[in-house]
Image (cartoon, rainbow, N blue to C red; front, side, top):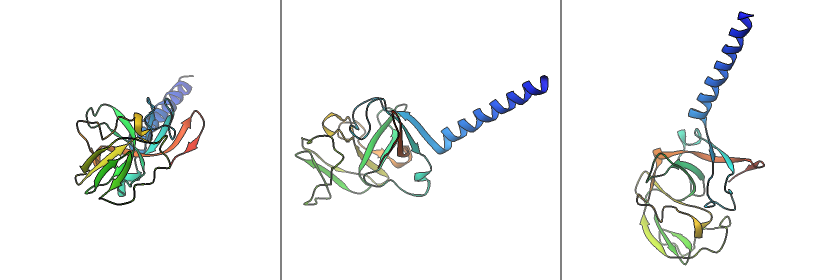
Length: 170
């Protein structure tokens, strides 16, 4: 009987250690509390981001990422990468322009017609400018005291919404 109990304890301890390692080094498992990423990710959706994605690559424009909120690093945020290091981001009539381009960024994932003028923002090296897909309701880089997200504060790229329902995200 004692051998069986010890066997169960070892199995449970191994499972807990494995779950801890996966959650700490491989994935970020998070619940999205707000509608700032609607309709891509809805409030209370549960998502998985891969930490390993940015071990060897840098974030790219359009990636949905989990990161430490620059104004309070104890809070995790989910937003889309818009401005890359060294770029100038300007929002005119709700449309995003990079480095003075005549053409705005495509915004097929944006929930509704965005409005407002912001910037220009000069993204420092090693940092990123973030915006939510629900642009008119998103508290993002445009409004933060610390405007940019440092690359080492980006925890992972979101690939999957697993609750409610499963959906791969891009």
